[in-house]
Each structure stands twice: as structure tokens, then as C-alpha cells.
Image (cartoon, rainbow over all chains, first blue to last red; front, side, top):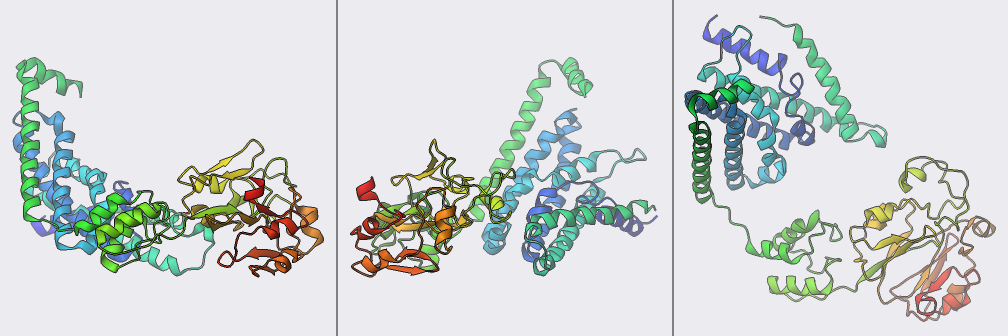
Length: 200
Length: 283
């Protein structure tokens, strides 16, 4: 399989089959919290894609060239969280300076990317041996981070789109907002379960 | 997992502790330096008046000003030119400080205090229609067959207002009646919004007469239903006797217009059912 073929396989796998939100159940907090409006969902998605890509790159390098040579693999969680926290802080400063509106609409969820398990999840999955015993190299780790972020954004946007329409729909008062959102989340996860059968 | 920790320790002695500390420490240091550098590169200038006003405001985030929280109000004052005297919990002191920061004049509004327009609601003075066993919340109780109490206008007594009060100003006495602490109440209006029967209104501090009933039922009903036996039956005697025509009777319930009221207390004296209370004489 050539490079493009492998890339396509990885994209389908990261976005549809092993989607971080709907099949790994990571990063559920922003999935439910920032999916009320399309704009902020898009902003959050972009922030997560950026952070996940950067986190994949930095965490991979730190693991490969600092932790492994010193036999400190057991520090991976600590080192990754430190890296991710610094990255998120950096992104936050950048967005605050360049797009105050986006900063305001992301609100508390931007700092929450720090503790977003999807970001730590992708960093750890990148260094975990695959089913055939091999590990991703640097390029594939970064691509995996990027595509997983795209998968997250895709689901977040789908959720936001449906929820925007649900606002208009007639439904009992007690079902408005979060209750219908949770039912929707469950239904989407069931729908994505259908991709499980896809094999390459 | 145990192997991972034990093996390096055994293999390399003390450096097994020093090495991770040094590496993690230097990682943290490098990240810290990068962030410190980034904060110089991306400085954000915030209007310092906003920060100052946030410091002055009480920080209760009660929403009485109509803004989402204190920082929202501070931003609205500086950026949108909102009035300076909207902070109810802060009172005159805060208004004065904000006026100083903004370099403008502002007069404080008169302090308002919440009052529950119902004398029923306790354990001993409520007549029940049925035994309610649902969720302990007024909002939930009033939705079941017009509430568990016989009077479908009065207090059901599940203390939604007590829960809503951020200033600990509403307490419940031994009879289950809600008492509003006139010193602690800031007039933020959280209880006004939360009461499903709309019994609570904000009334200027200087006023001492209140109509302690909200029943809109026609004459014999309020008397039969009221557990406290102090219903407003809508007779209109108070409206007739009021020297400044501040009381109107509409839908079988008398209401005082506090912008006209002179706090003379005549209405409380003439009310045949003692539905009007006067704090000056009753304490």
C-alpha cells in the first residue's frame, strides 16, 4: 500500500471507525459543552485539531528522544500532561491576542483542552504498539493526531448542526437543551457503531 | 508496571531518582520560559477600568444588574456605557466607587428588599389538598394538580427561594415559615425569579406596609382556603381609605403602588382580614 493509500486508511479509521468521541469516548466534555452553536463548535474544533497535532509531535519527540534513552517511559503521562498544558496555554495566548471573539465564545473550554482526555489519549495511543507490534513513526504520529482532531471536529460540528435545528423543534420543555442533547449523543454513537465492521 | 519502576532504581542507584527530577524539572523550566516569552509577544491590553470595577463589585454574580455576572457588568459599564447604579447587592458604597473609577456622577437607587406576598406556607398554617410526596421543589409541586395546598395562589413551602438566595438572607423558622432577613437581603431578585407562584416582589426599604396575600380567588374562597386565615378577599376597603390612592384592587386582590405610597399605615388598620401587615406596629 502506497503512502496515499495508507493515509486514506488512517483517515477513515481516525474519523469514522475509531472516532475519538463516538467510539473511544474521549473528549466528551467539549462534545456536549461547546456543541450548542456552530461558530463556537468550529472554533473549538480548530483549537483541538491544532493542539492535537502539536501535542502528537511534541509528545512523540519527548518520548522518543528524552524518555526512552533515559529509560523513563514510566513518566510518559506526567511528561505529556506538562507538554499539553504548556501548548494549550500558548494557544490560549495566541487566540486571546488574535481573535477575542473566538476567545470569548470558547470560554472555559479552551483551558479545559488541557484536561481533555482526547489530547492525552492521542499522545499515548501514538506511542502504543499497534496490533501488528509496530509503532507509528514521527510522520504517522503527527498525521494520526491531525486526523483524530479532524474526526473530533467533524463529530462536534455534526452535533452542533443537529442541536441548532433541535432548538427550533417542538418538544416538551423538560427535554429541551441537555436531555435531548444526551439522547442525540447516544444515537450518534450507535450510528457510528455501524462503521465498526469496516476493515481494510 | 512495577518492573518499570523497580528495575531502573536497582540498575542505577541514586541517579534513578535524580535523573527523572532533573529531566522533568528542565522540561518544566523550558516550557515556562517559552510561555513567559510568548506572553511578551502576545500582550493583550485590557481596559484597566474593567479590572478595577471587577475588584469593587461584590463578586456574587447574582445577575441583578441584568448582565451575566460581575465581570460582564464591569465590561458593559466601560464598553457599552451601562448605568452605574445597577448593582443591587453592592448598594450605595459600590456605586460611589464605580463612579470614582469612571469619573462620572451617579446616585444610588433606593435599596429594595424582597417580601413574600403570602402569610401561609408553614407546617401549621397551610391547608393541604393532598399529601405531596414528589421532589422537594416548589416548581415541581405546583405542576401537580395546581399544587398540594388548598390555595392555588399561595406558598407551597418547598423553599426554592431559600435555595436561590446567595446571601443567606432567607431562613426557615420552627413552624416552617420563610423569614426574610431585612439586613442581609440585597434585593438581587433571585428569589423573585425562582418562585413559581410569583409571590415575591422587591419593595423599597423605607416602606413598611405589605399586602401579605396573592389570592385572586373570589370572595368566599380565599377565606376557606387560606391556612393562615389572613387572606385578601378583594373587598377594596383599603383602596377607599388610602389617602393617596396608592392601592388598586384588580382580579380580587389589592396591590400597593409603592411609588405613591406614603407609608401611613391606614390600610393595615382598616383591613378586615388583617391581610395587610405594618412592620412599624407589628415589628
